[in-house]
Amino acid sequence: MERHTTIISPEQITRQREYCTQVHDMNATLATAPLAYVDTYGCQQNEADSERIRGYLSEMGYEFTQDEHQAAVIVINTCAVREHAELRVLGNVGALTHTKRENPNQIICLCGCMMQEPHMAEKIKKSFRHVDLVFGPHALWRFPEFLWRIQTRRGRIFETADDPGSIAEGIPVERQGAIKAWVSIMYGCNNFCSYCIVPYVRGRERSRNPQDILAEVEELARAGYREITLLGQNVNSYGKDLGLGMDFADLLRAIDRVEGNFLVRFMTSHPKDAGDKLFDAMRDCAKVAPVIHLPFQAGNDRVLKAMNRGYTREGYLSKIRALRARIPHIVLTSDVIVGFPGETTEEFEDTLAVLREVEFDALFTFIYSPREGTPAAAMADVLTKEEKQANFQRLLDLQNEISLKKQQAYVGRTLRCLVDGEGEDERNNLTARTPGGRLVHFTGDKGLIGSDTDLNITSCSTWALFGEPV
Ligand code: SF4
Image (cartoon, rainbow, N blue to C red):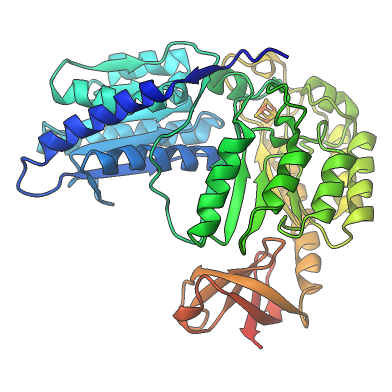
């Protein structure tokens, strides 16, 4: 199979790193290192993109601040998945007129999915004149060039042309933390779920070469990272565009063979593409965590069809059965949308029935949010806002009941957990994760952070477990 993805050449990335050097040399003439402020909205893919933006900024000689007033460069990495997040971004960007007034040389950059929406880029151009640079996810690899052009005062830059997407290797990464790391294995999505903006703003599916992924995982394992999360909009499509005969299950098996003491997680899986081969690999690979996030979105077949999800309720349930037959202790999480256009309360009952049958460990729940340019945005509603809200509440109540029951089943058990950070109060000053990703609060020595510890689970809430070292 011939591959159509545009690969950004090593020479093009080298050129970007030369821009980094040029900006670095300009910054080196300042009395102190200039500061950059990076704010990230949305999903883990955006977090991973921001690590690349920070990598470039670091190479350009910037240090980082949490205070936008102090920053010479502000980068806001935006999310287009929900209207609420977009409104928050616009509010926060509007407030930056004050920081720019205090510091007219401040450079304000907006990037991410929201900037790839034509109407949004237009709005920023006309109404947010204090913003200097706007670029979509496709153009991230050119960030140093854009910043250099702005620093040498060539006006505002808008780089948001429609683009099916590319693959760029060799961008520096400034990771947040030394225990957990993100590794993007693919970009974009071909599924066009009728409510989702992602395929329009992140382009078509394109997989990184397995050798590049394995090299990154090996480097992370050597550096002592304990948890590696593989990212993609639909990881189960991995490899389809490569023509190498390697799919996601094969990739998991190859990663499992990498030497080191680490656990692998992945997200997000699409139920239509997840199947026995993946479940076998999850069962067989010691390094693959016993957890899967498998969004089912709705429990009614008519609604699933209108969502263009590509599976039925029974198809979904049969996959859960196949998975549990192989890994009985698997931790299962999912996403649900309530109030999809046309969904009746009777149809919504089917969603509650799926919850009762599967008993997910945790659920990410959303009330449908129309996204301009998607087919669902033109579909008619049959329920009022209040009716949708009432259904949403029923969903939350049921899931809270299930989550608590699931959490209670851990109490009295001893689990080997990865201590991953500091907690919020003195009594529970540390946090840890079970292999299945359940959060545990406990009291212990900070020196434990980054290590495996046996924890006796003593109590729980709906959201967290509480334990003590054995
Ligand atoms: Fe959006 Fe569907 Fe692709 Fe997920 S699989 S990113 S919901 S289009």
